[in-house]
Length: 231
Length: 64
Image (cartoon, rainbow over all chains, first blue to last red; front, side, top):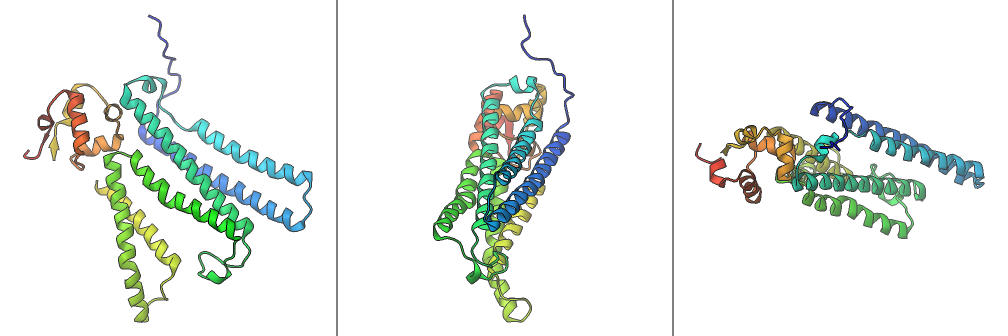
């Protein structure tokens, strides 16, 4: 009988090595994309400030975007995948798992794209001198239509995608995520009054909106780490 | 909750990843169930029982 399964030429990596390679690809890819993205935004700002866009400038920006696409392609190309034997083995369960992994990657990519659009749009169309982290709200200025679009994107990125993501993970990971969300929520519920009381007592500066947001995120992350360790 | 998942898996010479694929869950979930750190949901317990062609109480035991 003919063996249609292609020979395994690659040496199989251990699960730890696969995780390490994936981690390196993600970190390296993100750093490269941030670097190239910042370069593109900076160049674009300089060009628009000068008010004289030339073909050469467009070509340079196009080149940077092409390099970003290259980084994404390289990450996809070198991403460790199951060997052919593993990929062909099993039944509908494996097929569903692979489909779910692909969907998860799609959603992660979508979330990254939304983040990139939001970051680019706020940096490029910002009309004030405000800073999201500084709390100088009156100095934050964006075109109203853009603000509405960004608000919708933020709802999608911070609410719809995570909630929809719960449908794509199994019981075990859902439990870990519930613990993480609970940790974040409880920390904010307790964190704000505690901060206010400590401020009233003269111990800390007044509560800050971004500080509350950071409490939620940090405690959510810490709770997730705890859940991974305990469960 | 104690269970016989590791033994049943070993009898069939399946890796955790293989069993995870058959159950449509993550490998970490299989590991957590085997080590008793995580109790599966009822639908997952039924899937496990069907996969091994056994009853749930033959695999899981809360009195062990």
